Length: 378
Image 1 (cartoon, rainbow, N blue to C red):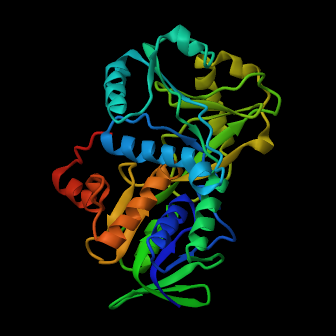
Image 2 (image 1 turned 120 degrees about the horizontal axis):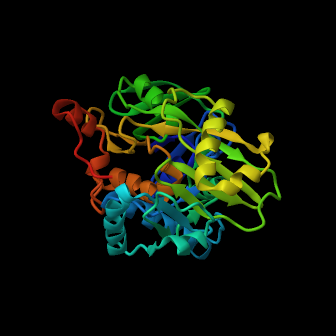
Image 3 (image 1 turned 90 degrees about the horizontal axis):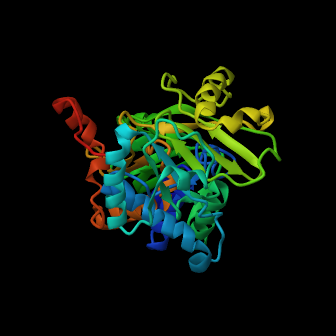
């Protein structure tokens, strides 16, 4: 089978890339090892999206993506589950000046953000105010349904002529004047490959003799019993500890990243870590201690992490036609609409020109090794 582009991965990034490429008139084939869409990190994500970032690039990627999700019903006639339930940051004094500067930057890009005093923030999410300087609130931030969004992009891609092949794991990659991939029982050939394989992006690249530093890193989401909450709780992050909470229906979902988490694909729930999370969480959200846990509703997923926890986007300098769209370290679903558009721009135009995405190029890791650091502001 021949095509213009082979997209490896049917998560949010691969699906968005396939849609934008097919809409541009290219012959696209999507392959994925799973039996259906969003079965990797996308479907197990926390599904929260925000434009509150501290650098222009991430603000642009996220804000444009939020607007794309928000307009999906009007533009495409499909509801992808976007809800502007908001995103609240509770900020300690040491980080307050930087947070205020970030707000100015966000507003400069058109993002609606409010600076709140603690009593105003407590009206959104109840919390203990000790050790905090203030809060910021993004009313257009919120949630999107990862399964609906991914399936919507694949449906639109198919409507534009793309083919989607599930249960097709890539087992070999070769290149001469084009790329040849062995996937399932098929041999696929194309001038371009989009590496949207999530936490497996490094393994896929290794089949082609390339180095793409992406690994899996487990993240746990703990859940209370249904009916535990009387009122909704927006996505709320205690910046000092990293604890996050938000409601899903009448449940509370909560968690925090484990700093000593070992790399690797692991979907077992880390119950010992729950004890540490609860100890940190109840100091900021004392009411959480009274909520019953539902172990069956808890889950673990994985981030697709790079060494600096920022994504890889663009053509591999050592392999013309190989385009990375991976390693977004928990931001893939959040930024998928815009990343897919930029993948199509790279392939159809030979470069990404509408956004300065140079900070996400693979070459930064070689530069970092030589200089001892990236010097990137995120």
